[in-house]
Image (spheres, one colour):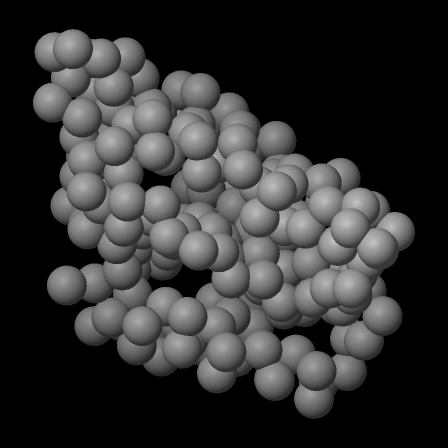
Length: 174
């Protein structure tokens, strides 16, 4: 079964690592369905039914986005608010349409990993900072999985650094 990879990047053409990950995923169309939200909805007007039908087709879903301002891009929050509706994603009569689906986050992170720790600059690790996603997906009975993060892209944009991320990301997706 394919993995649905939801790309939420407001500036994918200027991206380095996220764009490279997409290029790699396109080499394996039998394994990955790529769904770029900003490309699909350039005006950010979401076809909720279409998104729900898409999500229902997959047992493995990964949300890939740059982590900035200690959160996700705003369009992802809008997507969550509009697509995960009462009566479909949760609620007594919903059938919990995402129940049991394996869901994870794949993040590109600008700063070094050591900065995301109790002794680092930001005092919290990514698991703590992304806990609202875990809570959200657990609330709708999805099987939230540990996240993938590739750190340090602001400090090192070399081709070697970016390429180092590719097998790590593919391994995570498997």
